[in-house]
Amino acid sequence: MWKDDELPEGYYKNLIRSLKENLDMREELVELAMLRKKVQEQEYLLSKEKELVMKLDNEIIKEKEHALKLQKKPDASMQEAMRLKIIFLCVVVGLFIWLVKSSN
Picture 1 (cartoon, rainbow, N blue to C red):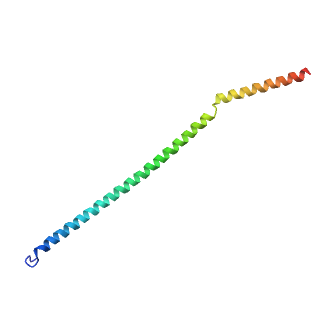
Picture 2: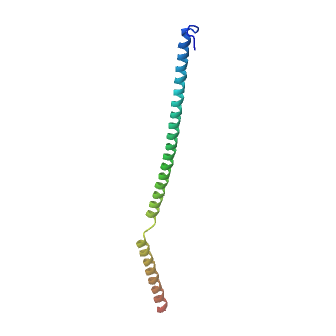
């Protein structure tokens, strides 16, 4: 058993204060560990969000490029009309040449 009369009263106060400080320090370490974990989670989520934004940006760029190609490229009906005009002109030129040769 302890003999209270051998230890000064300040010893217990110092011991209690030291134990409280130690407890506070451990609580702070636990809080720091929790905060570090939250920071890591947020950094991970931020990186995933950046990846998603980059992916969406790439998709937007591809869609814009596709739209520009469609604007520059005539549609199928216009291409068919151009082919028919060329065929018609070839026939007319061929007839003209045939008429010129046959008249001589």
